[in-house]
Length: 211
Image 1 (spheres, rainbow, N blue to C red):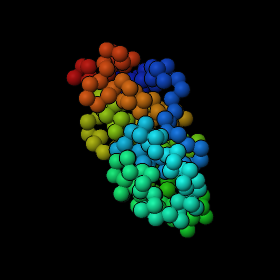
Image 2: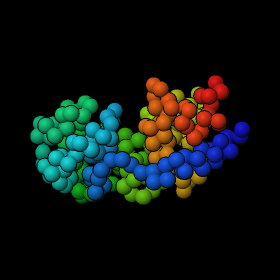
Image 3: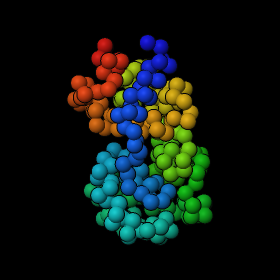
Image 4: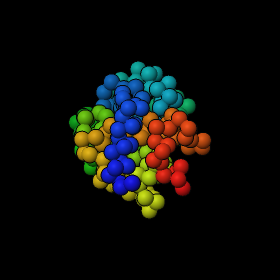
């Protein structure tokens, strides 16, 4: 099967499997989404959604968070992974947003990745979800699923190399939706330890099945 045909089939089937594909993080503003995505690193969205209501009640704006210390933020995020580092990054991020960007979450990738605790994946999520752009954030689910299916070759060993390969073959106007398809497929079907191949809509074209 040619690579383009594989991508087209994956798009067709995953779009049917996940017609309402979107982030599962709760947010009502770019500030809230940025905080939630930062907290979601190596942590489940379910856990983050349990934490953020109280966090946003305590710090409803980026200015409120900028005025807080990591020690004041910590009690609200202590149940997520790496709470000490994330408390520090949240405080630093908020201060930089206020000091350098006038209290507005920046829209461009270069500016976003200047923020403490914000890497390329988080910035791409902001582009795709908060700002309505097209981007392909690569998290552990996207990385795993794209390799298993055969969308990317084994030589793509970094998130950036996987991102570049996926961007090359998915239509530009489909990138953000495709990102959500791959995440949800990895979260609920193509799970890490025991993928549910019998229930997979791609099991007749998946590279893992024929490896």
